[in-house]
Length: 349
Length: 72
Image 1 (spheres, each protein chain N blue to C red):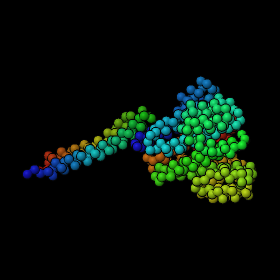
Image 2 (tube, each protein chain N blue to C red):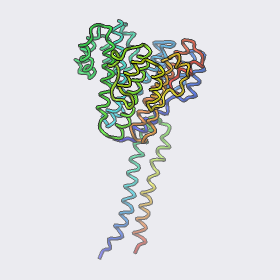
Image 3 (spheres, rainbow over the protein chains, first blue to last red):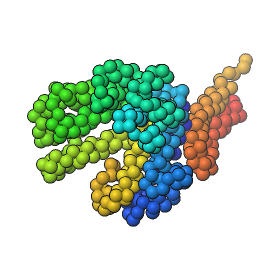
Image 4 (cartoon, helix red, strand yellow):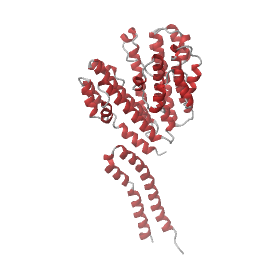
């Protein structure tokens, strides 16, 4: 594969990610309309112009960002399609398939309108917009799974297997866990071959598994869920988290234990978390710290061999972080939060 | 009897220079194509960068010519 070509294209795409100064300018904007004006001056112009034909205000920003992330991720995938990096990028982009399927499953559970749901889907993975539209049209969860199986889409395997254990619509969360387990198991099995590129993505996936486990642990501890109920939530394959430790912390349900455990994981998490947050058990503060760590880890992939998969992976994380930050700023403007509060909420700048 | 040392020396000087230039230009060319695809405004710079390895084959040619003309 001609790595130089892909590398140059990715570096070109990366150069268009908005700068920190631009993010600060967006924070300083007084309202959502001026934020849209500023976005029109950036690389988001085309997406903002298109979405402003149908939407206004926060919905315009949401749809423009959705379009932008889909367009860029699909563009990167098209650059590596049919080449040695295809499976690696496909593994990363499958995250969006999982997120989309979870959204559709949840929407069926709460009987949401299909057109509303469609606006929340991001067809950046292997499930394209047409597939998602058809899946979204199905009346219930069982029909969605049947359609996936008919089309021989891989996600039908874990869903069909789990569907047998579901007794009523309140248990659809089991399908979501099944999707998560399937995604991580599949990713690790595809990355089992020892190559330099595989090792970069495998390390990232293993770190992500650890962090997902820690986030689950935080929420489960807060909600006082018993270890027996939480066992199937734990995801195998991480670098640092162990099932025994995971369940032991849930038995005691002490937030201090949990923070100490996170500090010991080797990721250096929660060093800067204030004592107030620990005392108040503010899960959102911990979650934000974990998200920041994961984004930093993803972005730092670019510091590996310059012609390795590290650069495309780093770009995908940077793009995700950029869009997430702009969304946060837009929602904070919409809800009237102060600039200081906006800065606190940002993932990683 | 024909002295093969002079033409062999000249061909090595020219051939290796040409191979090196070809290898370098292939790498620079593909990366340059990628760069121009994303940023068309860089095309002038890329053409200059693409031409730099040409110096190797020119030097190889000069050395080969010197071997043929000057070595007796």
